[in-house]
Length: 102
Image 1 (cartoon, rainbow, N blue to C red):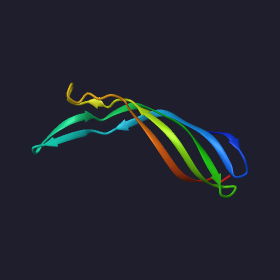
Image 2 (image 1 turned 90 degrees about the horizontal axis):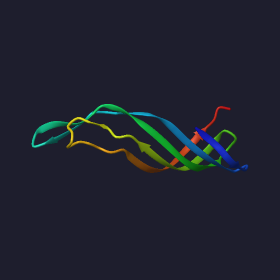
Image 3 (image 1 turned 30 degrees about the vertical axis):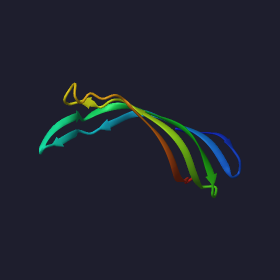
Image 4 (image 1 turned 45 degrees about the horizontal axis):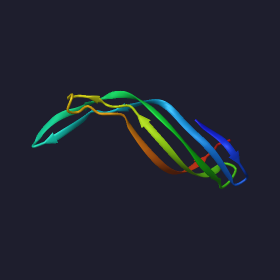
C-alpha cells in the first residue's frame, strides 16, 4: 500500500506498507561432502513499512527513492536445536521508476 502525504508539481512524499506472508525454501548445509537439512520450507509472516519521495518526470512517470524496514518471521528448523533461528529484519534503500497508465 502506498499513500501520498504531501505533494507539489515536481515532488511527492509518501508512506508505504505491506503485510503478508513469505515462503522460505529448504536450506541444506554441506560440509565434508555430507549434506544436512538445516531449515525446512515454511510460510512465515512478513511486514514492510517505510517512506519515500517521488520525483515527477511527467504526469505518468516518476523516479522514486525510498527507505523501508522489513521484518519477517523465523524459518522452520529442520535440525533442532542446532538450526533454530530467530526472526529477521532488513533496512532497504530503493530507487525505482514508476509508470502509471492513468
